[in-house]
Length: 256
Image (cartoon, rainbow, N blue to C red; front, side, top):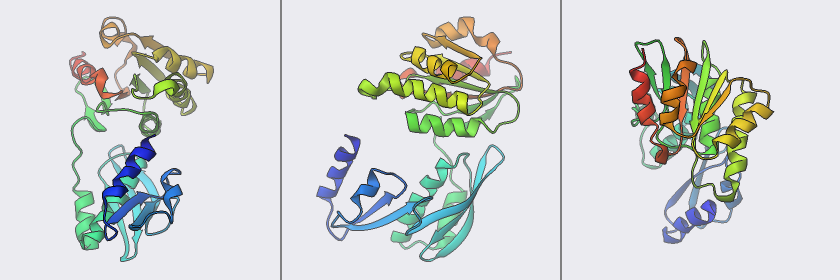
């Protein structure tokens, strides 16, 4: 349904316009050869117009990769964690080339990027907790990508995950899958909040995770769950915008 709606954009584009598409997306890949507009593809697996390799994490805050383009290659350091951020950078590179920016200008833009508030912001608190503040929004794909970052932290990893909206009839299954994914990635502690948190918790437990807790509301967690956290924990906080998880971010900043 999302693919169909987004494809309506092409009906309002001239044939001289450019479509910049993620070739790693199996649904977008089905558009190959079907559009009248000029198409530029980017990806990691799909090595066509603009692609990346040599991807590696640089601590918790950065991601290094080599980006290849028709104009040449460049090594860049993206000031954000997560391999999924490479795809975002590749889309920007592709657009930049279409706008006649040089590779040096594009590299400078990437390496000086500042994320918007609550999008994987790293917060090292005085109380010994480290927060991966990604509360702006959530869906199954982005939740799994954030868990990929959390799994590599030093010390104990804690996932504080909430309701993911707009999933329709697939909501129970997808919450369960995210819980199972947290277990498979070796996350130490999972805290589930809100609608379908029972499914998320069940998915984690069925996949072998031991430390799993669920609460109906953030307020219930504040009252009964704060003692689950320990100094030195790295905590991912992620949920749909409607959950307002920034309130828990503020609460954790005041934990002694």
